[in-house]
Image (tube, rainbow, N blue to C red; front, top):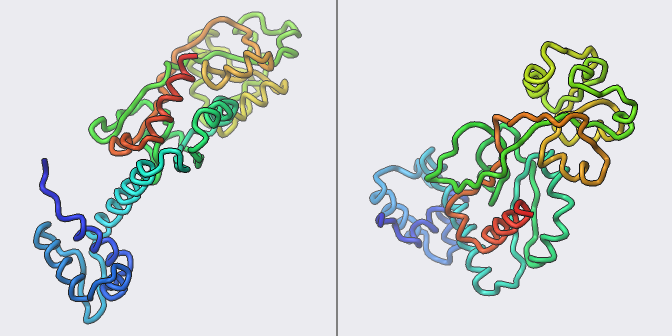
Length: 294
């Protein structure tokens, strides 16, 4: 096991770096200024780096100190959350969850009632996960990411979601017009894109409709908006087995063709391994697992 500096020294450093002042840190910690200075000096000797630039009575954290302070603040927050949950497991726990916009809108929202019925002590803070980010932000406990790139498995726990299958979807009204009998008929309809470069539709059309390129096309920021436009009869969107699932089951959307295409990217549950120790994170992972097996 690695030999770490004392918790007291790290706490003193975090306080001094946050205030950029030894005196204010001493006041918060209820110790003398000299005690703070002594702890910082010992920590610098142990780490072999300067943590503060001393300018008379003023101090300024170095770049190394800034990085250490950020990491310590996250660690202390995790420690505090874990201690609170151990003292009273039924007490309110906060979980910061980041989800891509389309998955939040078209898959997660309808399931939150079940989550709160099982875990009423957890308060969720929901954030939008950037579609091109394969790891959570620094303040996020758990994220649902989408991508093709690798994730550092030594630092992050990764649980892939079911593989995505892409397929065209449209409203029942549009389908019942009888103008969507084969993929080549898409040339006469408006394509609804959930990306700005049209790569998903281009790949599907190349595989199933040859060189057909419809004249009318509409581009949206994410799949949730494209699917909603399709449900309202604005054209044909590219759905998948996760984001289009609810609308297909309810009948708001239908699949005009049976053919599908496996996505290059994949959704995954991702969190820092350190956060797996939090009961709320473990419970959220268990809930996701149950939902995805249904």
